[in-house]
Image 1 (cartoon, rainbow, N blue to C red):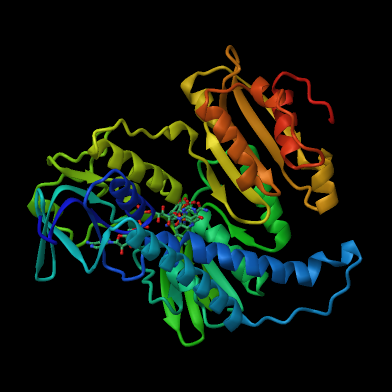
Image 2: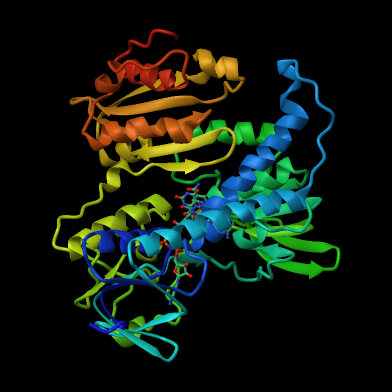
Length: 464
Ligand code: FAD
Ligand code: NAI
């Protein structure tokens, strides 16, 4: 085999692609991974999950230093923001983690190729003038910000999430179009750092698709923190001037128009599959009506030997979902039985408090005609949450009315993103609410709220 012939070529080195490449190499397959970026890790590591979480942490500390310490009897002088250092810290975390993947590639003897890849036919990939062959090709090219007609992103005054991770100064005013995950996370960052942030959401509520009680609590909490909301409102255009951007607004249902001025506008209305210049049409690979690469239940496209995983195939656009698919796809290629349990993939919004969702919502179960029981427990009644000083929110566990099998869990509160994990594990094992209720949880811990919610499913919570 020459250096241009591989068992597997993965296109895209995001969480889907780089994990697929490592798993394929572990299984003894000669593997190459191609990415347009030299820095590995895709959207998630370079301009997504990691830099956003670094800024969320730094801005949280800034806010705590300003407002959160006095109640503990800790007096601090008003904190001063050094934005350059904050952004530098974020960049260095990204640098460390992306280099870590380059190390893993070397360790697993994966060939890293940098450049824009094109699938010329089954088994053939080109990068510029170079041609490569592979028995199996995995497309893991991810997604990009969805554009909003009339509101053109210049990454200065009108930014996507990428620009919002690198603003050179804190804007006085910021308009966020889209009250989803990115809008709330990055809107929170800049609000904490001093911007007046208004979130404009097309639907009547933020975080569409999430549990209704969680959305109610989240809206209340974010308002208290100072985020402003314009719900059921659409943006019909944007006019840029030296001093800022003027957005034209209209009620989603039609009616009187309005305007909103902002120094910076963040467009975060969702993401769409990225398949530009990939040559899918020439290679005969089918995409669906929204541009997602169409696959069967085993990540196979309609062309033999071409597979697709991650954001580019749709479903939950989450890094860990892409990673699971990367592992499963590599195992299937190697002749094993790779599998992903899509019913037990948690989703977390890393605001303060965090919001976590898993499995079905009550609304979904009602729509499906499934009978269920609900157990709910507020953090206000949890000793650790009290001690920590973060009592807003609750844990909700939903279980099948007949079998008690856990069908969903929804948490808003301190460390929700970690707490959801025990419920995910229980779901993965087909567990019941009683399984969690009878598991000993260390005291005092916020995880006791999960146990109490599980006990509440059968009406036997102790501390409420
Ligand atoms: P990507 O990570 O998008 O990687 C695709 C890669 O393919 C890119 O590096 C791209 O350069 C490359 N590529 C594309 N086309 C070609 C080509 N033709 N040739 C060569 N290379 C190509 N998810 C979470 O689970 N948790 C979070 O906290 C979280 N936070 C986020 C915050 C932000 C601001 C954003 C934007 C996203 C966030 N996400 C988060 C979503 C997460 O980033 C994605 O779900 C994840 O990155 C998808 O992985 P992927 O491998 O499918 O694609
Ligand atoms: P999103 O789908 O979460 O939210 C988009 C929001 O914009 C929705 O509330 C939608 O109703 C609204 N919207 C759509 N069109 C609109 C319009 N014209 N005007 C006003 N509002 C409009 O998408 P978002 O926030 O852009 O994030 C993209 C993806 O990235 C998400 O699917 C998410 O999975 C992923 N992500 C995950 C994170 C995490 O796991 N913590 C963090 C950030 C992103």
